[in-house]
Image 1 (cartoon, rainbow, N blue to C red):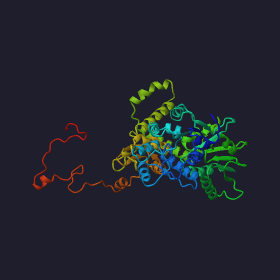
Image 2 (image 1 turned 90 degrees about the vertical axis):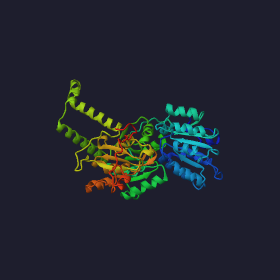
Image 3 (image 1 turned 180 degrees about the horizontal axis):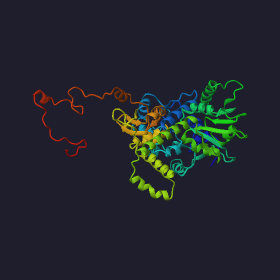
Length: 511
């Protein structure tokens, strides 16, 4: 592979390019600048497409294009949804359009996005797109791209899947590698997984927990430098003698290095870490873990659990123990004892219990929480759970497994704390353990599922009815199911006539 050369020169030769660099949107200018330089502001046509793994990445990439374009009058559109993208493409000219492969393909098929003037398409990061179900949409989109358009492919690592895409759609591409192999010295790092907007809060919690004597917080952009500087000033790290400061590379005498942004190369990481042994903690999105391991060059890469997350985990463990105590107290075992008894010849009882608990959690996650634990009965005969309202439903293509997976992954909630998942046309109602309801509302709000940002809140209507001890009443004279009375019979003074057996809801034979 080639090392970094003149990127723009490669683009000027109408040559496809493959960039291998860490998954960090602060490094977008490495491959976006040559593409933006090719744009003719006077040509009212889409000239650059950027395909991203999800809408959040599309918004980040659009912001990077805005910074790269500077004062040039270039139309830029982050098509984070089909409907908004189609409307704005009809109203305004755009020379750069950014979105997921599925959204871009839908815009092309609807004739909202014209590709006649397209000069280049960038796919970033292809390894992340391949980890989703968007490869078919990407392939159909690439089939519509003009043959003369440049293909720029960005990846954090070269895998067989990535190489297959490169071979098929960007043959004889020039390689630009931001990870030179000249220095193989391993760099030990720890990491905290956070969402992109959650980094600033994670940084505050990290400084509270570690309380370092001296620290340097590494950033790669002016915007992040200002955000971090404002936080540090508010925390009391201000002035020439501040013991914690923001840096673009020089660590000074800091004992702790916090990577707010990922360096774009091992060279940048070495400059930031320096030659002296230091503790390094990276604030990364889960998708960036592969890039961090590559940057570490074989050094130890270990997770760091902040106290607040650890306390939540301990709370979940205690809730599981309470559930087990309830079952053990009832002691109604029969077949179960006969099933596990032979295993006691090979394993300790606690190991068998741990394996059973693991299988239970796995099955609950797989079944969408339908078999989740139900606590003691409340005063109205329903289980003692809290109902949550989620602003996503069947029309968005969401499944119970998506809901449960988001809660367990993003909210760090155990599957045993999630109950019934009722998916309606435009919303979803989820029953959860009351102890984790607030946590789910806070962590799930703003998370994207099936291309739609979720709003989570307590199901106030249901809660109000339970507190008042009332149930929804049918309108006066209404029949069960919401239909009115049999008016013809009522007006004649006769009782409603027998209409015979009713068909089952599925349209089958009458019962």
